[in-house]
Length: 220
Image 1 (tube, rainbow, N blue to C red):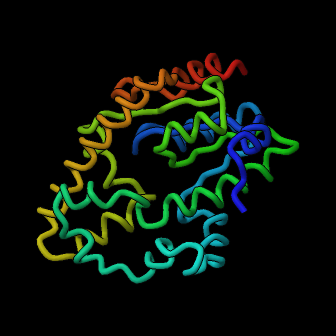
Image 2: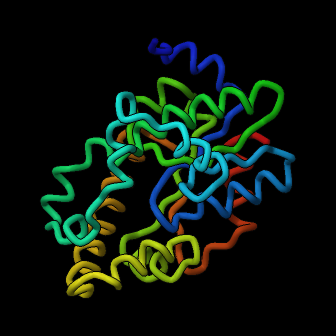
């Protein structure tokens, strides 16, 4: 069974979406909105409890990419060139499969509550099919800021430590840095193309200032 996007749109009217780049402030701002306005904060991070459930139910027949994630040869994975990474983005090792799980969780959570969803969605056509521009905000960071901040974050420690444990980690970090630059530009271009509300993080950005911008956009 495939659930039509118009049905999802109807069922997700209580959900506000924060999407964007790494280090753009999605999780921070989702937490701030949840705390101030009593929203449920939904985070699709792999380490969250909801994804422990997800990982317990994945099936090779229905979620082939997610199933393969457990068997990845990280040396080979991170040894790929930038071009090879870009050519292999169709499912990002299960991200699109996991999104189906997240959408159903959001439907369930939002029936009697407002939900702020900190999720990874790159397909803006899909996002605009299931939600309205007034409930979508893109939180972005420039590539160099992502490179500066990403590796030192506690929630990215496994990623950083994995690369450090491999052969020639400097070269592998250089590849990831270039991917961050490309990804940051691509997401900004999408936000502009689809006329989505966006906030670009800078060194002088504050939680209070960004929160006010989001409240104005979401009309809350």
